[in-house]
Length: 507
Ligand SMILES: Cc1cc2nc3c(=O)[nH]c(=O)nc-3n(C[C@H](O)[C@H](O)[C@H](O)COP(=O)(O)OP(=O)(O)OC[C@H]3O[C@@H](n4cnc5c(N)ncnc54)[C@H](O)[C@@H]3O)c2cc1C
Image 1: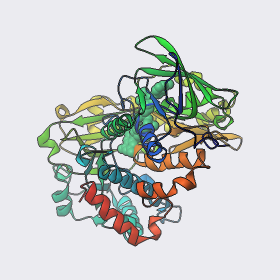
Image 2: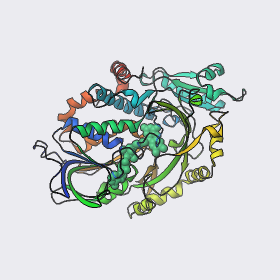
Image 3: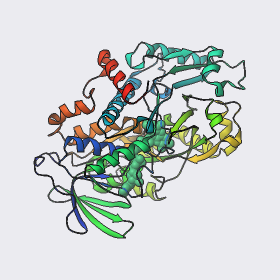
Image 4: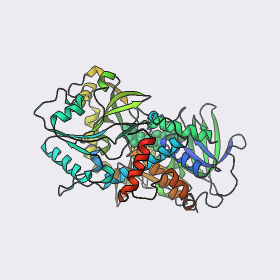
């Protein structure tokens, strides 16, 4: 039975009762983009349900959703080559690219609806049009890029994609990448003007601001320490108020663990069967950034290259235009690092304490089979600041050391899952929910924030089977292509793209 199924029609309960004891219908752990998105969806669908958000830090979006902790790419597979692998027969598989693009269309629609309905304001404060570009050099890679272009160009989701191997045109569109480049080097790019840069931090803050204005109880400096299921089926959650030094007990009918890298720890503490066999492998990262406006003015694109041998897919190098607080700048990276912490502000015991009898097998199996990843991490760790700028010179040959500073990005916790008698390391995101739908959480990091709406719709479907049909008409208003495959309906795709482009000021 779903958590809120039986008593969904009861009058709303207030989220606060006696001191030190709080009851709430919905508890969202963590103030990142996932909780903010789910909270906004639920408040719209079921305004009578009380919602409480608990965040251990003193502000929202200070972990992965913070603008400088991620790359801000509106991932829609327009430029990321890892979504279009080349198969053994030489053909290019575009199925993953189609899925990721469809998922991003849901986010665009949800945000456009938010603008039209006062949930979000000023689209330029969180989303901006920036061309998405794939960049390769060398004959074999150019051949692959051309095949990828041929496979995608006729598809309605990838309309407007161009293939460019003319050196003069390359220099006109990407002056920073052309300046100082060896004339004998063969280069090619695919280009689309439909790409975006997203400030997921600004987006999170606006969504949570709206949620608060609708009566949600949002508490910062509140660290969820433990949770267990009570005999009546509700969740008893132990919380440390870090400013007062007090411990609170919260009773919640539904819990979403939107704790980013910390989600696996809390889901393990919940004791649900479904988390057994899962483990987390943290990969930290750094970017280098250039705030010099004269350099930034020479590059107006997000340019994704090819991954190094052994590199995990989310580590493909990219040179990105960023728009944060109205200021344009450049970001390059990521460079991988390593720490056992599951959050940037986490603890060195996160990884060792997450090892359980149920996941030690999958972890060990991944350790044995992931030598190329380990070798890659060791090489990355050895890179000095000068070495990092050297890597950038494959993109911007004349890059000056002094124009670039190192910044530490957010922590990614990759999913390790039981597979057969061993385990597999995965680079996507996975929703884990209990069989009764009373608790869910999100593991993994990629494609991440861009697909927050799709991931949170998945949570609604899994955890609220009793309500989802009744919610459908409203969901279709929030996200008009909900339940529709846009790839099969080019007319609807064109209409929705025109609407979102106009409302989000992307065209
Ligand atoms: C280097 C890097 C680059 C990325 N680039 C992109 C990109 O270009 N495009 C894209 O779409 N996605 C990208 N991502 C992924 C994206 O940032 C994440 O998927 C997304 O931000 C995750 O949101 P979240 O709300 O789940 O987690 P977070 O934003 O990490 O929020 C989790 C929150 O939970 C809080 N918390 C944790 N434990 C507790 C607890 N016990 N009690 C209370 N609060 C707790 C944390 O403090 C934090 O505020 C990138 C990620 C990284 C790390």
